[in-house]
Length: 242
Image (tube, rainbow, N blue to C red; front, side, top):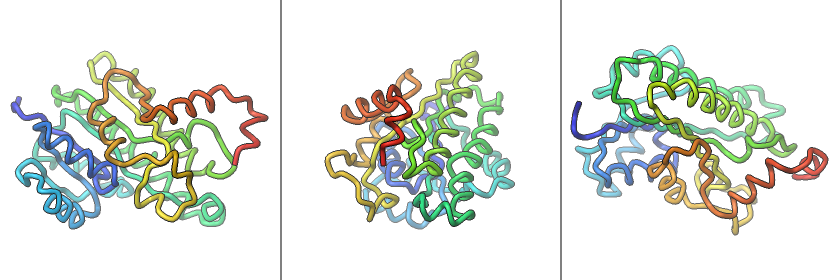
């Protein structure tokens, strides 16, 4: 087994994923950064002065399910750590009228994740696989009228990872889910979100890179409190939320 461990980041052009690339590279990992936006990733690596020898950039489309098997088979190295960070947001009122937008969220957040992560998890020849991390959202904790379509895709992803964690436990593979609140990113740009609750992508990336044994990781003290409140809140009170 190579002395340098490999991290595969799927959806590597997200703001959190790009910061994770930087942090993993700083820790001495080799990063396989996979995204449709390969040119943007190349610019990021150059701008951040990340050693290009520590990063391999590959094309990956979460929605192109029929390419996932060949994508995984063609990896230059099998991963020790896998991070699924692909994301897409369509506002709820738009999604209710735009099936393609709704369906795309389902494909990017759930179906695409299941497709590629099943392939990775079932490769028992990769005895070096140690961890799978998924980026989810507090929007998936409880159904709310303002974002229930997006939230439902994140909820499904979280439940998938919960089962995968149990399935992979006998092989000593850890599965984590990052349940994040509002992130200052290109996906949330232009949304009217409370400034006091905004988290920087680098902060979330640190939670990814430093993930331990706990399954659900909620970055930020305020969001930990909000998570617990949402979990315990009676349905009649949830119905009054935005």
